[in-house]
Length: 71
Image 1: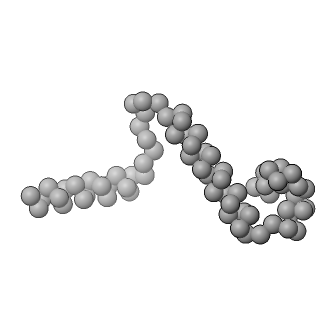
Image 2: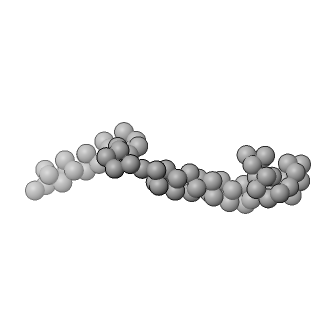
Image 3: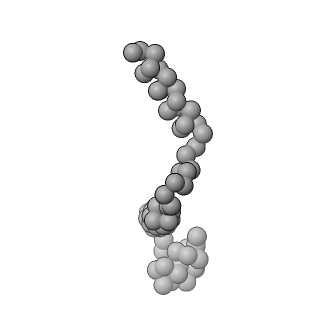
């Protein structure tokens, strides 16, 4: 991360260590995460199953079953 941050801002890693703040690290992390998200979304193929955690799927199923029982 340090090397990538230094490369991005055209600085030496030692300069980044001296001058960077936690805000710089946070902004870098958000930018990289968004870029990866956008690339993944752009490369999504029709019919491909999205990567959804099993816990989220089970919660959704539970909510659906509860709504069906109320009817």
